[in-house]
Amino acid sequence: MSLTAVSLAFFALSGVTFTFPFYLQIVRGYSTLQAGLCFLPFALGQILGAPRSAKMVARFGERAVITTGLVLVSGALIYLTRLSIDNPLWAVLVAFFVFGLGMGNVIAPASTVMQNTLPINRVGAGSAVQNTVRQVFGAFGVAIVGTILANQYAHALQPTLSALPAQVPQAAKDALSSTVAAVPQVVEPPGGPLE
Image (cartoon, rainbow, N blue to C red; front, side, top):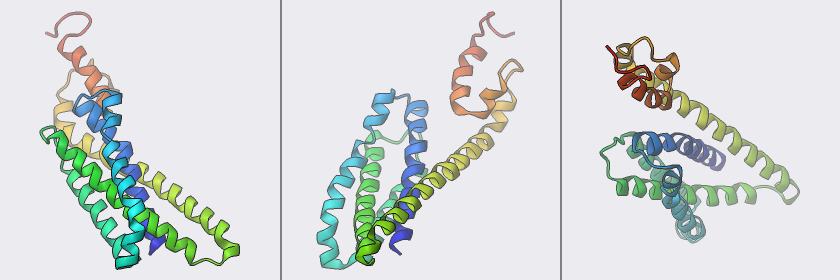
């Protein structure tokens, strides 16, 4: 259970940290620095959650703490999938905080449980396996969530993009950042206004 919990948490973490800079920079128009600062509540949630998770485990048991952490991560993810440009920034930051708090309550106790169940001469190998699985699920998170994002983008904007003039490059029809860059050319191309 512990390895599965950590794997799912890292899957979610990688998916969020890969996709949400697009939302913050392209959709909301934040600079790179501003978008990066928006992730600070996530770090704060982990800083508060991870050290306190040991006391929570002593009081409620590791299964309850890890499950609660996964519920917090899931709740934050469900909210984040419903975001639009109209959502207030404070709500996004609170969701990031809850996400980080959940991660802190999953990773620290689950890692401790995994290490404590191994004989002392296998702790190094166990740590290596644990780290490898984290990295693999992190890569899956980027690949799967990125693919879902790209497919949703292409599907949702297909009717609008098919109406664009022929001089708009195909790349603008494939990626949001390219579309945003191409819009000024369509509105006011280098040779003058479109007929």
